[in-house]
Image 1: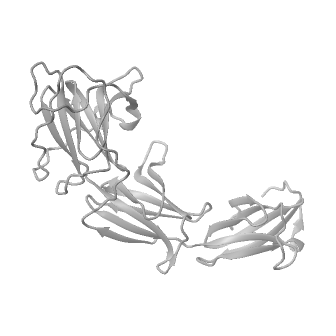
Image 2: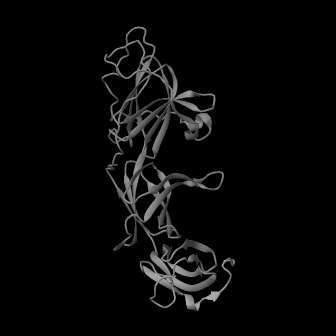
Image 3: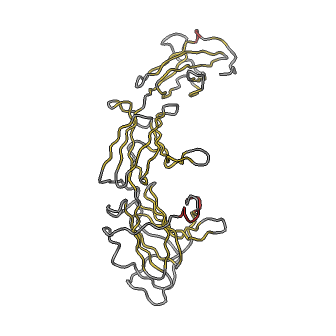
Amino acid sequence: MAVIGLAVLAGLALAPAAVVPAGFTGTAQAETLPMPPREKPDPNAPAAAPEDPIENLLDRDPEPLFSDALVPYAPTQQPGDTFPSGTKQGALYLMAKLTRDSKPLESGLIWRIYSETTNEDGRLELVATSRGGDAEFRLDPGAYLIHTAYGHATATNRIVIGRDVMSKMVILNAGGVKLDAMLTEDQPIKSGSVQFDIYGTEFNERGERNLVAQDIKPGTIVRLNSDTYHVVSRYGGANAVVRADIQVLPGKLTEATMYHQAADITLKLVNDPGGEAIANTSWSVLSPGGDVVVEANGAFPAFVLSAGDYEVVARNNGKLFQRKFTVASGDDKEVEVLANAGSEAPANMTQ
């Protein structure tokens, strides 16, 4: 397992994504609908017990069953605080918090309201959406599924709407993680060369971890449900890969630095030491066991390689040229392969 540095910060301040003002679209109807009550949910009130998630209803993951096509459902909010007679819809006011004790989130939320009944494709119909902080909806009476997303932190709740006004506070039980990578505490890795993938710790039926987020840049705050995650740090595009299990705590920001043992290596095929690189060369870098680590074409291929021993094979003009070399962490260098020290062999020779 990787060597990592961890810091867990209280008082989580997760930087919001681009904020779109809360709102929704729909088909207007003739009747006048009321606004939700002036009294919004009390952020300090005890949270209600969580409702059954969609997994229990359908016995499968929720996202693949969700349709992205909006179904017209209601007009936007209209003035008025009480229902007029004959109103056929109910009003729903939603807020969300990271934890029971935290303040309501004011931005960065995505609300999706799904009908509980499926369409002809067996998917749940998307009835309404809203982005920003708290959200207000007008809905026909019936059962709905409320999907709340804050970055990669999500919650799904079931609610039954009547013809009255309802308010609900969603507790996401979420935190965040901020990732970085270095060679040593005093030796950073150049910008743009590291990316992170975040996986769940459990395996699916194919024996693979479920991907949560990918291609995360260093310094990015990723919002996640409280849980343990398997983080993969990729330095370059070859074999410099570090893995670690990192725990995300509710309402807190976990900062993790992952340390790589690797270096930048540039390959050259030359006639004499220090000479010019020979063009039109194909390259294979092999592990001590003969496995191909990385391949490339050109006069100056460059890779980030994990510390260790390697053998490089250069192909040029129907000939093979070989050399063994060692990579030390942080020791960026050129590796020259001498053309006059190679052995002739067919270009299609098995590696």
